[in-house]
Image: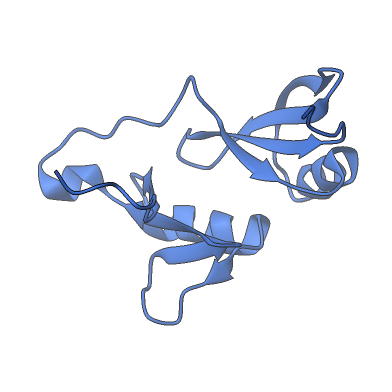
Length: 122
């Protein structure tokens, strides 16, 4: 068996691919891929918007396991996104090791702002 070497991209299910792409690029500020109209990057992670219904599959938003988007300052990032109209689920959570704030994209896919502030134990 061939060993899995990486996660090549996250598939972002959408009913309106243009709307979703605009959210990831304009609202979240992800870097557009110069070679693909519906791919954008957060660091080394590609977010590829696709429409399952165009492939004969039902659209199902990614829920129940929000994708953690790493930021340096969760409260500041949350404030900036709220100013752009993003609605968050509840208050910012402080777990004792990290801050998290939960929200969804335009398609209902769940995301979170995340920052670990406590060092990892060795």
